[in-house]
Image 1 (cartoon, helix red, strand yellow):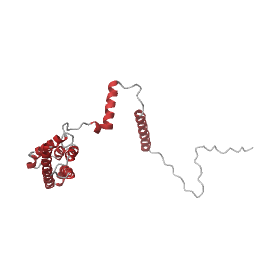
Image 2 (tube, helix red, strand yellow):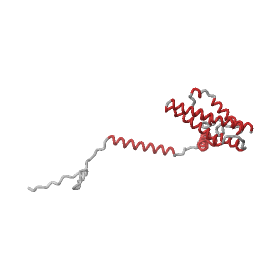
Image 3 (cartoon, helix red, strand yellow):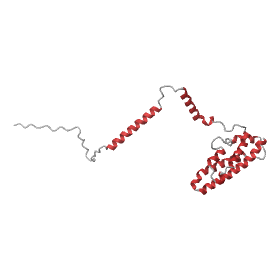
Image 4 (cartoon, helix red, strand yellow):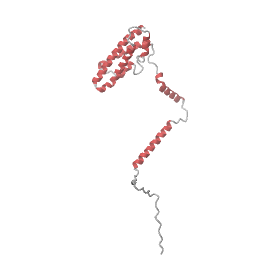
Length: 214
């Protein structure tokens, strides 16, 4: 009898490679389902972002209508030069603006909020011309420069007048946050704002008198 030697069994291609001597064995780690979900969500997020960017930088297929073109032009003009396009609040003469500023300060002083100790900081700043453009004190420096150009006597220093207005504005702004420090802290800044208003009134009594005679 002749014995036939059977061939060695076929080695699968999926058999892991043998590790080199001296190297630690590598452990296979199965990919968790949560990792697959996170990777899928990340891919979807990137795809959505890329789609949004493509839409943002894609020009419309048709030209905008006249109404839409006008609206876009108006919005662009406001964004680029809104401050320059805003008209000046005071339409009268510069000297009349100074007289009107005195009256605005007197009206603020007559407000009963000073006795109640509950004046709003932004209301004071609105009269000072630093919030909004409705007060005659808005851009008052230009009017004062015209008054001082004639060099009238017995006027307070121009720089001092501007500093006094800024000081009243700063203290009024401080009252907005002073309540966080308690009622006593608010009363402190409220009283200092009242004193600053009196200083401004003193300045504008003199300035208005000079403007009326000028």
